[in-house]
Amino acid sequence: MEENVHHQFMRMAISYSKSNILDGLGGPFGAVIVKNNVIIAASQNLVLSTNDPTAHAEISAIRKACQILKTYDLSSCIIYTSCEPCPMCLGAIYWARLDKIYYANTKHDAAEIGFDDHFIYEELELVKEQRQLPSEQILGDEAKVVFDLWVQSERKMHY
Image 1 (tube, rainbow, N blue to C red):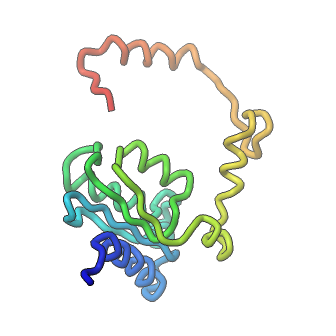
Image 2 (tube, one colour; image 1 turned 180 degrees about the vertical axis):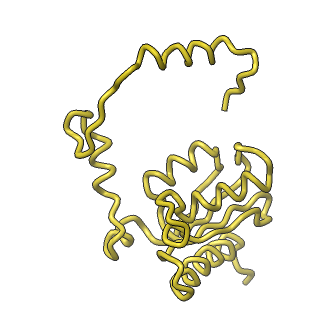
């Protein structure tokens, strides 16, 4: 029986996550982005090697795919990730308009080894005043002028 193509791409994402550990580069996460059954980009978690807390495997793969395809719109692409995406990565996947997510480990599996994003999901449900990270709006009227300029601009592109 021929192996499922989705399994092949997922095995590659898992391979990236494994090599990341063996090479001492960072956490056990890998991602592959595919379009029309062709690999466009692949990456592992680069947080530690780049000192960038946003350099999760999915984000890094999205950045590479966008550069390669010269677009911010990855519709018609699929992402294979070794673990269910965290809230940041899930947001990026939605913004990039990927068609589908395949994942191997779950967010519960990740939590069991110390990568627990549950608190972020809980924080998002709270009103701002109850969140652990204080936030306060300032200079909203001044910033609104720029939004008005955007609305009037003939050069704007909706994305």
